[in-house]
Every structure is written in structure tokens, then in C-alpha cells.
Length: 74
Image (cartoon, rainbow, N blue to C red):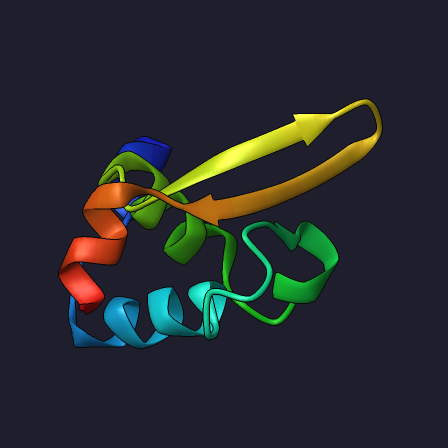
């Protein structure tokens, strides 16, 4: 069994996580530490579904909601 087999399908729970990451759109990028309570595989599922994107700037690591993710929660 590979790690890819463990990544869940996008579900209603992931849409809730997506809304949490997006917030009210005030902060376009969420620091990775702010998502520490979300399972890695759920974040990976959102990334592979191209609903969020990883952002790195120097030592900063975070996530932002993509246009496809914004359209899904709108």
C-alpha cells in the first residue's frame, strides 16, 4: 500500500476545511502552523485536488486557496 492509497477523496468535510483556510478572504495566505490540527492527508487531498496551493517564501510555509477552491465554496 502506498501513501497515495491513503489520501481521501474530496468530501463535504474538505469543503469545511477549505472555508476555514479561506476565512473571510482577509488573509490570502494561511501559515502552515495555523493548520496544525488538520490531518496531513486532508491537506494533501486538497492540494492534489488543486483546491489549495502550497506557498513558500524563504522559511515561511503556508497555503492559499486557488481560484478553483474559491469557486467551489462560493
